Length: 192
Length: 82
Image (cartoon, one colour):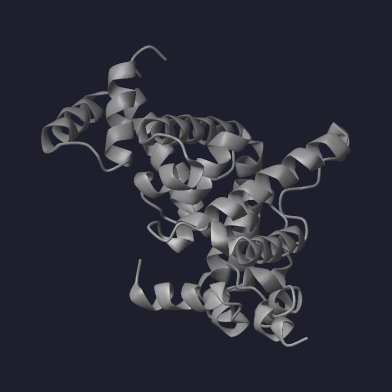
């Protein structure tokens, strides 16, 4: 782990919230991206991201500084997202499942500058289709796929975040990838 | 769907995970050149992951960090002086 991060964590352990703010700034968008693709809803993802950081702050004494801070933080974020999905599954009847991208306004999608409105539409539709497919993956495949393809993490890092062997990560990514392939074809979408 | 055999699917996975040796890559690509079914399968796998990679990474509102800080328990150092 880099030295500046070590110093920050030392300060945080003494209660320095300004030091913590620096870590939040550093990782907030990664944490948000993970939560967003895990739960498919921007508002809920923002709430979960907040919860993840607050939990990290409160449990900073449990953090093992021989590991990367981001590994530990991403673990908190994925676990919170999975817990959230399980609660939602128990509370919501199957016909009332929340659409994958509900809460993702055009505003949060941040279209490229100068992009044509039609292109924005196509992109939005593609994103919704892809998010819907991610949502259909079983939890354990979904975490592995999100960490791999949204955060571009190595298999080793994913294995540390999920606390499972690298071989198991691979199997989950292979199965997740195969499911996405099949479903995207049956949907007829995604041939971008 | 019999040609998309375990052997080639496993090679496809290795290539997609960037873990294939040069020789393994060669075996796969030589096969893909002659087998349309496997070629389609491989391209579909690649396409699905490309779509995932291309998802936007929306930014959080600027007030996010402050909002997190506001929810933290009171500063421990200040608490000592209470």
